[in-house]
Amino acid sequence: MKKVTLLIMLFSCALIFAQNESSGGIATTITTPSPISGETFRFGPGIVTQLDSGSGFGFTNDRWFSMGRLFTGSQNVYGLRFQLPNRAITLGYQDLNDTNPRIQWIGASSFSGTDLEFRAANSFTSTSSTLVATMTNDGKTFFGKPFTSTGSSTRVGVDYTDISSGSRTGVEVQNTSGSSGSATGFRSVNNVSCYVKTGLSISSSGGAYGDTGVSVSLRDGFYSSGVSAFVTANGGYTYGVSGRITLPSGVTSNSFGAGIYGNSAAVTNRFAGYFDGNVTVNGMFTSSDKKLKKEIETEENVLEKVMELDAVTYKFKANDQLNLPQELQHGFIAQNIEEVFPELVTTIKKPIIDKDNKMTGEYEYKAVNYIGLISVLTSSIQELNEKVATLENEKRENASKENLLEEVEGATFSMEQNVPNPFNSRATIRYTLPENAKANITIFDMTGKYIREYDLSNAKGQLVISSDEIGKGMFLYSLISGGEIIMTKKMIVK
Image (cartoon, rainbow, N blue to C red; front, top):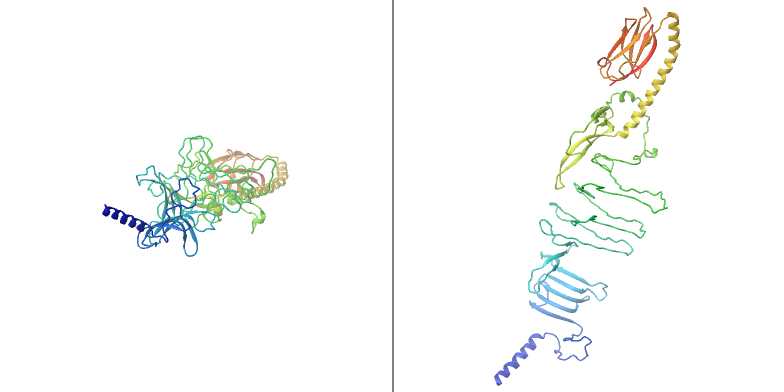
């Protein structure tokens, strides 16, 4: 019996001394009544530690646990610390003066696992769990399972409200992944079945001086899209990008505003806006203020150039790169205008994008600055009006000569309008001459330049004009007898 009693006493002593490496003896009673019902242990100021592996409480090789107040040499840290070799996690206050507590992950630069994971589990007996969020040591936060190959299980949910003053960002996403593959900074997937679905909704109020719903900054990208919208709709009102500006009732403003604002350097193949398809504009769109221009010169002598342009009707071919209308069109051919007015033609190089949104090449075509043609056509009309006015004056002067000639010779001259007018290949001009009169019909262009003349041998007959003989354009033809212009008319050859 004595041997048994001795063994029990030695085991108890060994257990007591083995569990106590703190200074002083172990308190066996709680002298102050506890305000917490059922309290079992109470510790004084300091730290409770457990060394699980190693010879000290180091960072590199030891494994230990601490709870309480830890003096680091420069400040007191309050909370929990779980230390494994080269990595640790702390929970609490970094300093007594800190306002906010923290969860802090610490990892050595030589240790590859440097992420803080948040997981959910439904079993106390299994280590299996579901990853719900990941924080990395460079400031990134991933929600769900961002490291799967397809990312089909990724879910992101952010509800951010900030009513503080100063500069605040609700959600800021930075993607600094490698150059290969596809990287998405922010992705919203909405597969629910409902009448109205919104991928990202931003509402701001409070009279701020400068509000920005979405701010995008991209730098040094080969193929970059600040905002890219792909919409597949079954009908109804559909907008890839919708912009609207409204003012409260009764409020007027002369300040600048734009539903959609685009800005691009005015260089080759760079556009503030590019539309692949029909464009409808309600209102004016052009800048024509004199203060914006220099080296201003009046358009002159353009009538001959305009006569070289071919106004045509046409239909667009089927094109898998451009969304072109199928209805009958009226206009010009860019190559034709480029020969006469090269400054009004631009070569467009549209990127070819595959189904994975990657650029695979360029589709090149020519476009016409139809706005620039307006001044050219206006100038040509003005020139034509001047020439018509001059011809009318000459006609009035010649009228008296014609009347005098008819009275002297007792004869009558006549020349009818060519039929048809305009014409493509041939036209007929009917005429009547006095007996024994010699006359001809002479063709001039609209500048008065001589083209060709036809002698008339019969007192009454008709003259057939061929477009192969005079060309295309607008012409004047005159009945001339005895060196005098009897009458003049106009013809158009298409």
